[in-house]
Amino acid sequence: MALNVIMLGPPGAGKGTQAERFARKHGVPRISTGDILRDGIKQGLPLALKAKETMDRGELVDDETMIEIVRERLSRSDVAGGFVLDGFPRTVYQGRALDAIMNDRASRPLVVVDIVVPHEELVRRLSTRRICSACGANADPAESGATTCRQCGGALVYRTDDNDRIVLERLRVYEASTKPLVDYYRTRPTFRTVNGAQPPDRVAEELEATIMEAVRAGAGLPLGAER
Image (tube, rainbow, N blue to C red; front, top):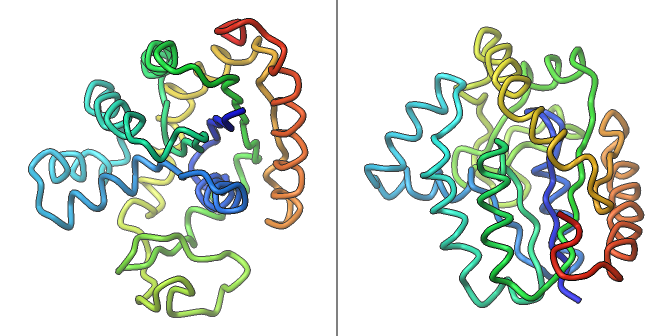
């Protein structure tokens, strides 16, 4: 059975790190819309550059752009065994579009995990978060004194969208646009929450157990019944 996972959570919840870790362990691709956009920015693609202006203001890229990015990515052969989506969907509209995309796939179920972290902790994390200037990876919070990326050796820098004003704006946008998405998924038998205010290794352990339990819960559902 394919392992199809959506990781939800506000900026600073650690979902990118956890999505990468889980995907690597299970041999499925982590699909990060942020990574796709950053690659496009490096290549100077007009759509990606326009999206960067939006992200730097702490706002979300428009739905149709993100839907097309994900639709194309999920059409590739490497997702046959499943995927971990990080950064998509972010609105109910995107969630409904993903449901439509999944209708064309025979693999089920679609597990949705919401990583929950208190507001005060999110502000603290975002205000001190760094990113690799070369590959775009987030710095490991456990290596606060590091100056280079442990993945590629690139220099770690503070994110342009993590100053105090934009941190608060990003969290406001999340509350307004993405929190309703959690409510959209909440009643599904394959929806779960995980406490993200724990050490990363503990979060990873809880995610593993939670996702596997949700997969088992959804395994006996008729096609599409998890929606």
